[in-house]
Image (cartoon, rainbow, N blue to C red; front, side, top):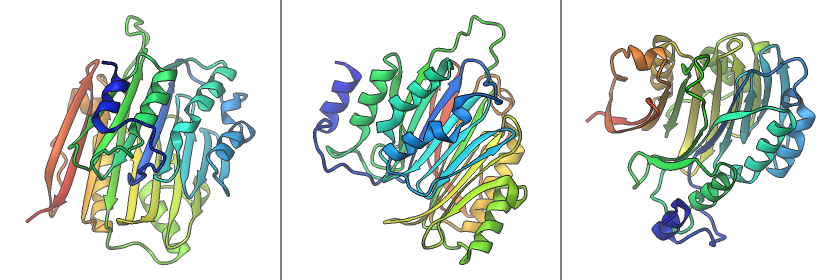
Length: 326
């Protein structure tokens, strides 16, 4: 049985049109086979991305060029492109899978080879016949037929549907695998600033830098989406959104220093005072946190409810769900 048919058998296929979009966040990443030439790549041009945003029905997007790359933000999506990769993070109502092919075609037009791609969809409920997973996988499998889907976390909820395409040439001695990916989603937070200046201050505190270093947009009801390039390699993203589950805050960074990203996660937890939260760590085999890990993640007043780890080609992907300690 093919993976697509397996998903069909699990929860009824992709023919249902009333699709469940309860998951708070989706993420699509492409890693380039060789570094981009930042001076002239069309991947760093807003006109190249505008048709993709239109296809997603994204309005009011703000594109901002930095020496390190391109940032695009709206309340519903954040796009970061630097010399090594592009990362798209979208809200639950955005059908991100409909532009996978367009993004890959944009890379091809830019003469950019792809040796890694991943997709993650955080879900708070168990998959059903209305789940987007089958459509998402069908689209990804068409583009990356050698890729693999898997679930990270409990099927009953607070899990990630994941897909990874990996064509890295590990026989090439010049290949270095030292990436780190850190994602956190906080639910039912008790504290969010009331005004835009206060929201901007919060974004600066979490992301660092000055106001001019951050690309940020504000939505209704104390919402925001912001990105910042920390340097030529590292970046961070912060999103605050309102939904059926209350206020949801998501954070991402690829900073490789374990002390640094751990301190930011602890600061977010202490500031936001969430009811629960999930953390995902993707650690490449040559990354410092994978080679020389420090103490496990711990947070005051929270305990681990569930932790799941998947290892592929000696890199690991780990999801940890935290709940309030009893």
